[in-house]
Amino acid sequence: MLSKKAKYALKALLFLSKNSDTGTILIAEISEKEGIPKKFLEQILLELKKQGILQSKRGKEGGYLLGKKPSEIIIGNVVRIIDGPLAPIPCVSKMAYRRCDECIDEKTCEIRNLFMQVRDATIEILDNTTLEQLEQKNIL
Amino acid sequence: MLSKKAKYALKALLFLSKNSDTGTILIAEISEKEGIPKKFLEQILLELKKQGILQSKRGKEGGYLLGKKPSEIIIGNVVRIIDGPLAPIPCVSKMAYRRCDECIDEKTCEIRNLFMQVRDATIEILDNTTLEQLEQKNIL
DNA sequence: ACTATCTCTACCGATTTGATAGACAAATTA
DNA sequence: TAATTTGTCTATCAAATCGGTAGAGATAGT
Image (cartoon, rainbow over all chains, first blue to last red):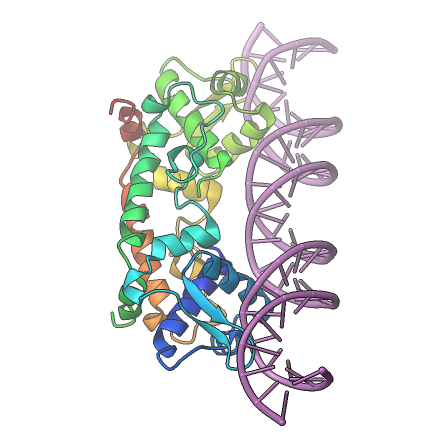
């Protein structure tokens, strides 16, 4: 499940990618244009900045811009930053593995093996899509 | 994300599939053997029964058994019954579609188009796996 | 009637989600 | 240097969800 927070993050990144050639963009502008609550967006952008996805500048003429090229921003990583692991259950997570309490033998756990497939399929898609590629997805 | 509830449901179904040739099985037995809180499991099994996945019998010699053949029980449907839609966002859900508040044109929404792929990949796996097939997944 | 079992409804505490509030820090500009 | 404009940080909050518990009720078999 993609949280609204993560969706907002992706919307903001798309907006920045499409508009920031000229310079920095205000939180307020992204908020208005994309219909995202401003104070909520602030937190999201700040988190993305801390993870190197964005850069910012304060004061007049300040604002946000992408921290790297759109072709270098992996959507899977953005989702991980905001929502945590992509895995549908902790016991199949690579980034935040956690054993199931009841599971006796993980290797023969049918459920685990099935949801490993789901995890792999999800990761395959999200880790092979960059922000640049995401921008292209409006023409289907 | 697969909830613990859904995981419990799948565990219970696997247990029933493996053991109910002989007749009905008590909630209490599933609960003990699979390490699932009994009262919680009751609710889960009841829900699965209402959806035709299970059958039950009350009183002495009562208990639960599968409502159809393991080869006819689709894992995707079990997960839907317990957790709701498989889709990662409401706007790409087939069973519980809900428009995004902010989205102006859905067809060109890049995020939507991307997560439609994720949905499709997930559904592809879970709707093409039956309980019978799930049982086989312990031998990888 | 008694007992074993499922059935139903209500409730509960903890966590997460989606957000809001406000003080603070830095950059610019008058 | 004072005012203004922007991002930064921390706290707080209401509502929903999750994982689970409690207990009374219905029904089948003995």
